[in-house]
Image (cartoon, rainbow, N blue to C red; front, side):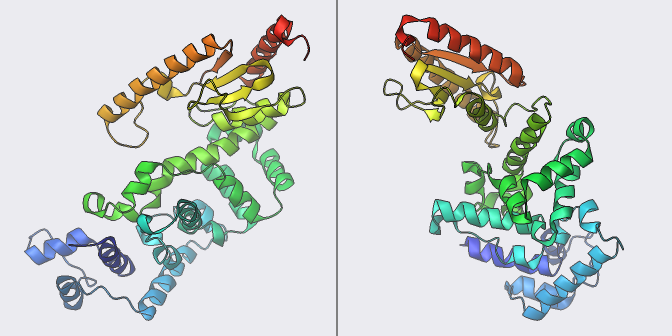
Length: 354
């Protein structure tokens, strides 16, 4: 039985030789539509038949040299910014040599760190200087609406004022990155998904976009622009609520008073028994975040509804007010509503000594 290590060796060999497994298989079974080119020579075919997938240092170096020639062909010093580097033909050996991770043999913390390091290699961030990486984030990762509303130069100034090094910027891009359980499972699920087990766009694209979008929303907030998105704003909401009200109250992320355990509030202000809950789209309809199918999404949705009902009942019984923040919220309106709720709470006899 093939192991993940065996599958990796084949994928690694195919990648360095720039071969397509389906085409090789078609040649072996004699399909008429398979037209081998010079890469699919007899030595390659024999190696594939015998499962001989060794790769020499010379092959790796040749692969790297050819890769650099492709990139330099554009004759543009900023070529990295305008080309999609993260695809089959632009995977570097530093990523190829590090992408195999046996998730059962590594601690959760080390696993996340290793994935983050591989993301840098996969997207070539480590090869860009600070200026080019900043431009890439603005032009390739930020939404068009952000660039149009704020402008490139003000965004550049925001970046340069906030970050002193490229490493600080990369850490910020990944600070809210958290791979889904499903993506972790798929890292070693080579039997069903094929080469995508080493495809970091397929595995972690959504989580990376989420992390970058949170940072983008921070930029928009700094320029008094409306925050975007519906799935990315819980962390940002906590940060802004804390910045606004922490001089008056204790602002707790994922707060869980004794009467609520094991459940948690997104944001909790214990002094006045006020909770703030961000209601993402999964609270309104089934969302297949992990790609597990409609039935699973429907089941998760029903469980979300049950948990929401239980949380509301517990809050009512314990005189806790819950303020629900919906997607596409306007932060100014959120602040106004929270201030009104605080005033109402302080007007109550239970809080006259605050």
